[in-house]
Length: 514
Picture 1: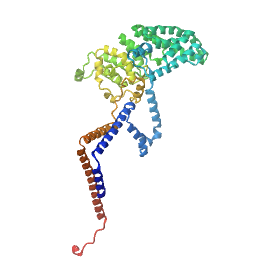
Picture 2: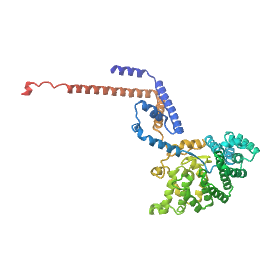
Picture 3: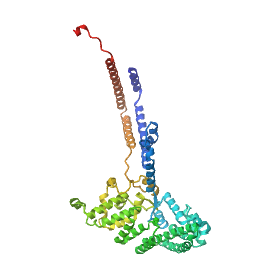
């Protein structure tokens, strides 16, 4: 022991201060690189790389056993159900209030130089167009065959050229749709093209309606013509709404919902709710909510927050937090608070945009329910309606500490964990995605930050005071070695005592016996 201590002391005496500077500087550099990588990985994937590797790879090697492995057979059905629930909750939906790509999205690009739509979002739109606007019998008609290829084109100019080529053959409704969506630079131009598409699409719909029972091929064609006609009429109503003809838009939407009551996949009632709120026809809004705000129907931010707005409108002009704290909440105020709580629990990202705590961007063409993309799409069109109701935003401001009041919420399923990843794919890179619940920094990021700071401070002190830090380092090592020596002496003493206790007692003398 003494030989090892003396050799270690001789080795430390030969070290120069430059060695300590290099040692601490290298340690600080390595820990800083680890900190930067950990922070980048956490920002991109939402978890710690070191923690993920330790749990996924090191824990099985060290003999760690998963708690659920013992009852794996019993929980297999529950796991599959939870996985199916997660997939269904993170399903991406078509935005019922999506803008016009040529007249609105492209104009934003021309002005700002930024792309408001992601490749993932536009790819989903291309898949929707192929699903709604094509069928297996399109190859039998030259114009429809051209449009079938046009919907698969990635280049916008190639799609527009294909649409013009299809129109040279005959009046093709889907070709007019493509030109109205992508080539028209104003809403008025888009409306003109949609009217031409309506004329062509209505004729195709009537012809296929008469032949739909002649076989599966005619049935598929009629289904496609129905989708095309509903899409055209809905976009015409949205054009009228954009151009200020709101009453005309409401009439068109009501007629469309009566003519095709089973086509709920387009969510035309959300367009109707927004137009009715613009007219301040709150009784009609309540009638629409009574039909669609049902427990058996899928919810949305438009449904939940519109219901909350109507409840808040009844009490918001006279509501005062100070007065409510003194006398308590009335029945109407309690209903309004519960409605807002329900809406905030469904989508906790919306209040940040309604209260203008976060800047808005153009909504994407697809949204994720309960996600940031849905919150943007809702607030983009409904912020003006909340501002119009006096005191509604003040009542909503009581939930400004969102998402913390939602920990006791129980109206919906637990908030899905996949929304952040899907929203990052749907929203442009220049937008900071809202995350719920707010993630805390992992332990390893804090640990590496502290280690980097500590080693950097040691490197700086060693560079400024090399001799003093060298003496300090040697003193610390001497203390450590002496502590080890004391531990070794204590252990040896305890071992001797134990040996003495295990020995048999010595015989007593006769004098002591007497």
